[in-house]
Image (cartoon, rainbow, N blue to C red; front, side):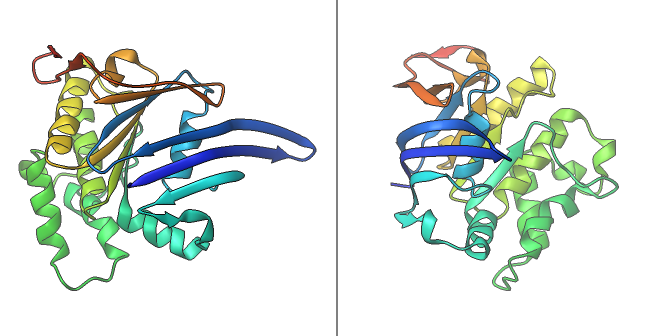
Length: 238
């Protein structure tokens, strides 16, 4: 199993005030799945994503990644796994300004110090796969919102991660660009990539193959999507 969470809880402490955010989350994610974690603002879905993406630690419970107990890892080991195993795509893109598209995508490779491949060649190949081979030398302030999100996806892919987390990836896009991004995520999943989508929108969540609903820090539903939306033509997949 790629990801396994059992009774994961998360509390935040502010002086004498304790805020309980996650109340015992349990589920598994197999390699190659496309899952949507869906819930309203304040439901705990972003906190859950931060824990799964090694950006935070649970207060209690067990989190295993590729059968490795995450609790046993120190901060340096977590940082290394975050860089090599996880790809993040955020609503706000989080691209470096005044920097080219190619340089943005190459950035995660800088920290790997791996001489078994050429960083520029790999970045170009990944940008080609998301349809941006014609934007390599453009600066990020010279491209559209949809293209910025494609750059962010390419950056998430360049380290060949085990899983891609997409946190409200269409939130800052118009409907056409949003549909193109969901189409790209579906294509990446069909190519074998494991994708975990975090969203509050029912329509967006239905592009995944499985939906986990979370409310007030608890899972309220977990089911396979029977009538999945296909972004390319807007139809539902039976």
